[in-house]
Image 1 (cartoon, rainbow, N blue to C red):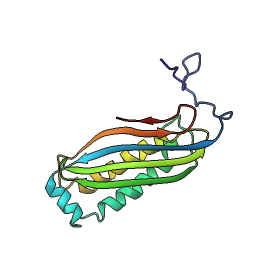
Image 2: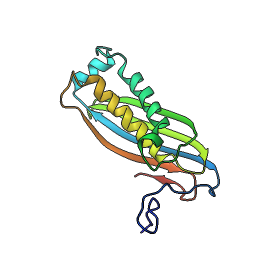
Image 3: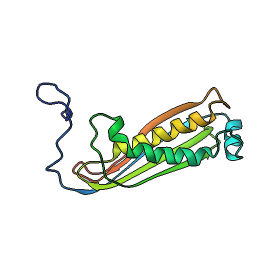
Image 4: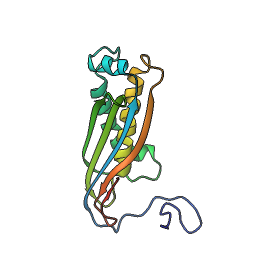
Length: 158
């Protein structure tokens, strides 16, 4: 089993030293979904929500969340993001909104936490914008679906 890198030999939490690591291109994708009623999906897609364009606001919120990850997660390094994008799509079979966040950088550490933060903040924003329409909204299945770059290589969920 791998060592826990955020603890020193005495069990004290610390930020990992990445000063000696080489920069490389890194990408991560994370996904989740917001389960809601079909009626709520229709209200969002028809622009019938009091708070405005739900998906575009959630997209911007996700980007902002990715950029502030190191402020939210105590031991994360500030990362010079080169790209953050969010795809939000309706899925009537869930029913709900599927969210996929992509984060990219060229640097000494990965962007998994930035992708996961982007997806979760985007989902929470969808929730906030339509909670008055639907009391049974669920944010579900936040997960890393792709990580590539760096010494650990490629990971893709099955």
